[in-house]
Each structure stands twice: as C-alpha cells, then as structure tokens.
Length: 527
Ligand code: AMP
Image (spheres, rainbow, N blue to C red):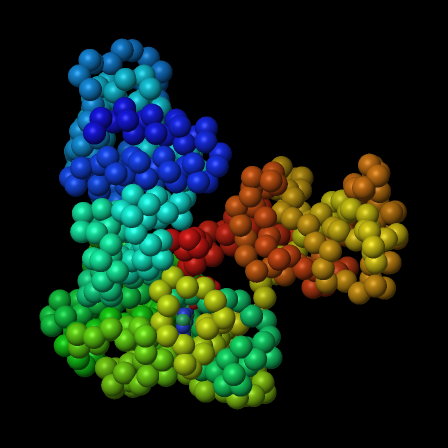
C-alpha cells in the first residue's frame, strides 16, 4: 500500500465526526493491508511510529524536529511513490542510529524520508513523529475497526487486547489467522497482560457491601507495579505500562530465579524503594531505578528495593485468572513459601479494617487495597472487585469566583471556582465545586464572598482571591478547559482554611508534580 492512501485516510477521518463512519473507513483501510503491512499499518493508525510493545523509539531531539518541520513546508518531493513499508523502514533506520554522531545521522535519515514524501503526505509524517495523528481514532474505535475488518465479534477483539496488550498483535491474529484464533488467545508466558485495577473508595461500609461482608485487605504499597514472568532460568519483568524493566531490576530477577518455587509462573506485585530503616523512599527514587540503564549494580545498592507480591496469574503451565482471588493467594503462598508477600488480613468488620488501615499508614504506606475473595483476575479491569482506600489527597486552593445556586441552593453563591498559585503571582483555575459545605457554611461563605466581590455578571460573581479552602479530589486530569492545564476530578471542600492566606496555597508547579507522580504510578486509563 502507498503511504498516500494512509495519508488520505487520515484526512478523511479528521473531517468525519461520526463514530460509525470513522470505524467503517478505518476497517476498509485495515482490509486493504497485506499481511506484511499489518504491523506498521496498525501502529501508524494509532498514531505511533512503532507498535506499543516494540521498545524502539525514534529519539529525535526537538531541534531536529523543528528543522524537519521547516523542510515539510518547503521544496518538492521526488516522483517515486512512497510505500507504507518504506516509511516503516525509514523509522527503523532512524531509531537504529545510536552513539557518537547519531543526532546528525538521525536528522539526515529523517530528511531523506521527508524529501521522498509528497506535500500531502508530509504533514501526516510529521504528526506521526509527534505520536499524535489528531484524527479522533482512539484505541476503542480501532478495536471496532479490527472486528469489522475481520468479520468477528467485538467482544473477542477486546478480550484478546487484554491478553496481548497491543492492538498490532490483535490485528495480526484477527486479520491473518481469523476469528477462531482470536477466540483462542489466552494468557501466555512472556507476553505481559494488562494489570487488574481498582476503584477508589473512602468508605469501608461500601466495601463490605460490595464484597458480601468479607474482604481481603492488603497494604497498598506506594511503589511501582511489576509483572514477573518465569520459565526455568528465563525471567522477564514488565512495568505497569508494559515496558520491559528486567535489566533495571537485577535483585528482583535473582529473587524470581533463586527464592521462588515453581518452574513457571506469572506474578503480580509492587516494588518499593526502601531506606536503611526499612521505610519507603520517596517515589522519585524508585522511578530513577526504573529508568536507569547504566550503573545498575551501584543503583541497586544505593536504592534497595523490597518486593511485595499479591497475585499469581499463571503457574506450572496453567492460567489461574479464572480462579478465585483466594485460590490464587494460596498458590502464591506455595510459590513464595510466605516470603515477599503483601501484608494481608481478612476482615469482616469496620473497626478491624480501620485498625489495619492505620497500621499501613503508620508504617509509611499509602493505604489499603480491598479485594473480593471470590473474584477472578480481570486484566485491565477497574471496578468494585478491587478497591483502594487511601486518605484523600488534598490541595489548598483559593476561591476566585462563585456561581449563583439554584433550586435548594437559591440565594447562595454555591459553586466555587478554585485556583492554585501560578508562576507570575496570579492564580490558575483548576475546577469548580459545590460539594463539602453545610447549609450554614454556604450562608456564611456567600456573605464573605459578597464582601470580596469585584464583578457580578449575573450568574458568576468574580471575587478577590482571599478565601482559602482545602480541597480533596480523586484525580488530577489534564484539561484544555482551564488555563492551568489541569482539572481536579470530584473536587470537594474539606475545610475552610481561615488560617491560610492566598500566599500559602498550592502552586501550579506543585500541582504539576502531583500530576506527574500520579501519572507515572497510575498509567493513563487507559493503557
Ligand atoms: P492507583 O495507582 O492509585 O490507581 O492504585 C492502584 C495501584 O496500587 C496498583 O496499580 C499497584 O501498583 C498499587 N498497589 C500497591 N499495593 C497493592 C496491592 N496490595 N494490591 C494491588 N495493587 C497494589
């Protein structure tokens, strides 16, 4: 296939708003790919120069990208058409250049590629270099397109995606081996699968209700998720975002080889960086270990890791993911002989659960996980089978405006616009909330804000930024809606901080750091 066909599809998808029409166009494209084009063709469609599971990357610096942008605007192209596979080959050659002089070499190879492309192909190439096609085709829609192109059930595509964790692999099986092969995709050693996720809960009552009165509580370690695969002497380890980290974690590799029983297994766990006193190090220390490629041995002695395993998905040739959580824990006990395990306690009442939560926090951990005893392991699933409980995270924000209430809140200024301190001495909005105050506090807050009023636009009243509130939230998300670039999900006021002024509130830099930290440990929902 010519790259121009792919570029034409991108332009078509860009101007097609409807989901069904997008899926239909993408499916037609997938059907036209020959078997040796599927891998690149699907990677490109998802906006990536390489498949997710391919560790290569282009590593083109910003100045080369800038210069490439300039050639894209200018000059003619050669007349020979550029094939999809030519582009893939050029990307491979760019990624390959390494060592001394590689920057210039990468740029030369990139320039060669761009010069071969025609004026319509060039902007699409450029978007691929940025990992962003802007055609509104997220992974869910690509899965639908694969199902449609392969005349198979969407459910089978979704299920296979959980086990293969890369749509390129899913499309290869679906389009070359057919629907039956897709149905047969299963957990496999050395193919990492998406980890099971949890839902946030603040309340043990909710947990006991959802788990039928009994739940398995485990310490929630503030570290990084790993999945360990082993067969005989071969051990490989993947991170939560499914990048391979085997080389960065030699001591975990040794544990898997020497200390654990069983010839083959897949285990799920968390590694935490620990200080000499046994307490966890800040998260950044751990991330440094994960990213380290050189001096691994010295890093291992400076920042030792502790391992806390909590699940077993595969053992001695068989998948365990349909077994109950309890049965999998028993298997994990056999494999570990009781070592390297997450602290765990079965609980049937709230007082017991709260005492265990306090114990976790007192030992420097993040909170607890609560797992339904009968639950299977559901890769990629975020739901009530696993809950996480952690004391809510809070920020101190200033109120910069308020909306008038309606219904029961009529007469009050009740929806508060929250902001953090920006770098210029001003305030950057991060969201709004009407949650958390009592009726009396609403009344008082309305009077306070009225005194601070600078502009009344009818619905929204802008105020001098003086009232500081402590705000709890579930997640910080990126948001184009607010000039800060971030929005707090499920923001609620937990306290009015009369003791604080606007000079003491959370800064945008701190918010950014909290966002990054959560992103690294959480993965975008993503994955
Ligand atoms: P969060 O990152 O806040 O969404 O919380 C879920 C994460 O907690 C998981 O992805 C794991 O990395 C981590 N975690 C720590 N301890 C446990 C545990 N005992 N069971 C499951 N996940 C855990």
